[in-house]
Length: 163
Image (cartoon, rainbow, N blue to C red):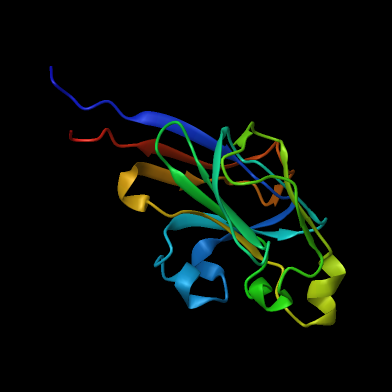
């Protein structure tokens, strides 16, 4: 039988807090699926860790987001807050650089949750597979709360490349 094999991946929550469906996020580019498939977390502490093993391929200049490339060819963006680029990096500390290899649970970004409250910004943080065309099956956890680096946030299968 010549069936295409799909690799299954479990992505851990990079943040501790309440898990929210991406469709319920108050930002159209995420809730519509335009940015890709994923979930979001309302963080209860200012620490984001790597949700999987991979390589950091992009750190946004405003320090509010980064993208990790997995060995299964998945591009995963972790963004802290919805309009956090307005903070222009204030209150964020990035612990990795582009081309760094990370393991699940490694520190990525620490941030000041109070700065979101002071500026009246949402700290709800989307975690999105930006190359969603590579995904077969996709499911977010049934858990209501996540513990950073421990709770499985999403499970997905990766389609084999045709080439």
